[in-house]
Length: 112
Image (cartoon, rainbow, N blue to C red; front, side, top):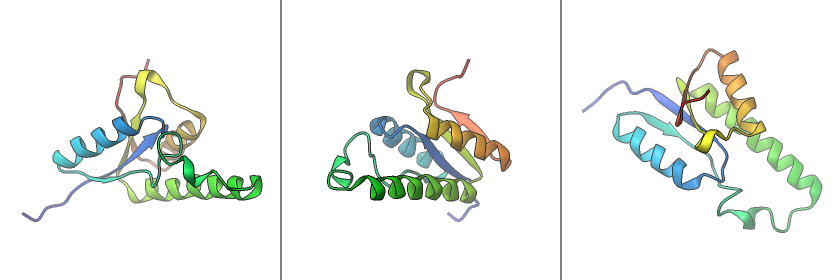
């Protein structure tokens, strides 16, 4: 089957690795191309940060934040992993960016 598939970028705290993986699977099975995070810095990829000096750590985090915005650029919409309503500063920035660039924003959990 050949089709036109919407592209969705997942956004949210990397502490919610299990929810990211579930959303990726569910959205893929619904026929979406899913773009996700490259690593889970808050839940499973701590070795990435272990031996970094402060300057390298800051530059790496800035690069990852910018890279995720480029992933939003590639998407038709974003899907926010907001477990128990949690949306951190980086995710808020990504939502603002998505809104500013005209991307549809969907959430795992209803927002109040």
